[in-house]
Amino acid sequence: MHTGGGSPAVTRVFDIEYSHVLPHVRISPVFGFRDIVANKVPERFPRLRFGFIEAASSWVPYILHVLRRAAKAPITIGPLGPEWGDRWGPQLFQDYRLLIACEADEDLGYLLRFIGEDNLVVGSDYGHQDPSRDDGTVPLIRRREDIPASAKEKILSDNPRRLYGL
Image (cartoon, rainbow, N blue to C red):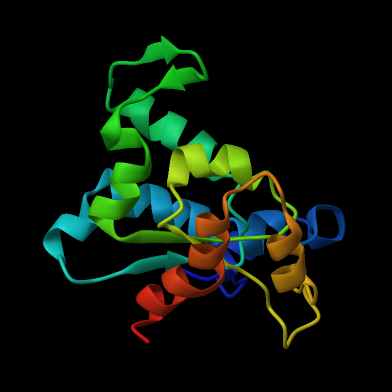
């Protein structure tokens, strides 16, 4: 799932002058994620990998919250806050082969709790002049002290290779 503003039905709803690219471009992968997980699409296609590209990754906790509430899943409060169990955390991403493109300046330490280090991929649109472009992604992620070295290597190398079958 990639960002894109090619749906006339969606673009007619928003005044682009005021809302820029969020509602009609960057929100598409978020909608796709919700629909894919809620309808258990990965269970029907057990070898297919799903990437959610160029929409950042900070939306994940919110959508997991929405999905968990819709499923009426139990919640407990642990030392780090709500604990939703394996179904609504990194295990979901692992089981469903869901990989999320992150941006280097997001709160990756926080997001790793929800997504897991095996399910984040580097996200930068090097060749375009758009909101996802970030020329300094690799050095910035490597310099971060708030995430483990193992997570950095997976985000920058291992996970993208797995997502794209390289």
